[in-house]
Image (cartoon, rainbow, N blue to C red):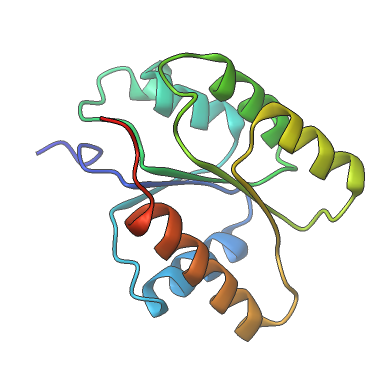
Length: 146
């Protein structure tokens, strides 16, 4: 079985520390779906559209994309723009998970079709709860079209 075949959650996060906290929070909240992490927007688009390093990836699309806003090479807004503009990927739920609480970022994200916008809490306990609840809803309970 291809290691990417059963991906349910695609985590797009450039910070190793934040990625580790997100993964721990999901596990603590009993969200045990297969998760793949990429480090920036370029890798995210290559993964989803099976290009570059992921051109031979088999399997379906993620059930959920957790997307950081501010990343090197290609930021979350541009990734979101491309995902929601493509008929093959526009129904994949995207949760913007960022430290930016700037109104313009929130407005632009919703304008482009983000499904949810979560600001990373500073408090670890709150962060864990928020991530676990979001993961449980979007990756487990939410229904996607076939």
